Length: 69
Image (cartoon, rainbow, N blue to C red):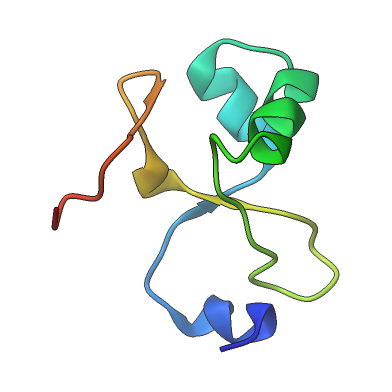
């Protein structure tokens, strides 16, 4: 599935600013976390920029395992 097809999934997507606010860090740190593969991102809507699934965050922290694990 390409990134454009992700918009059809029932997922809440957060931009980097919302992720930064949830984690209490600057947006530049979100970029670093993505670059270091500590946080996954996708572009679910063409032209909308990178987004992170909201389910990857909980209580101000990055969720390390999926709920299905």
